[in-house]
Length: 107
Image (cartoon, rainbow, N blue to C red; front, side, top):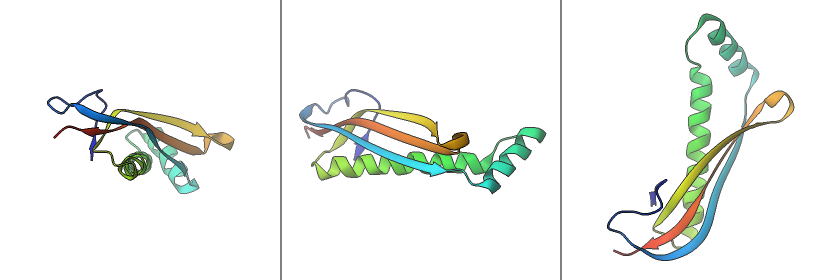
């Protein structure tokens, strides 16, 4: 499955547009990650725990979108867009969404 943020793939014209596909994931930040992030903020540096959570959430959302595209018979997803939002009490949850257009391509 080809997934790209571009509206086309050079040398591979679109045969058929199959519609918009999405992927979503919501993850909660636990107390230990919050504590470690606070310590990192005080002493400087990057928060590996949050970076890993963000990476995993993004990969899960993209994987879900690709599965939905594949269910429609798509070869690719064009124009993919990623969005990040914080939710919940005290902004304790992270939502990652992605969307794109599922297409079949000429060989």
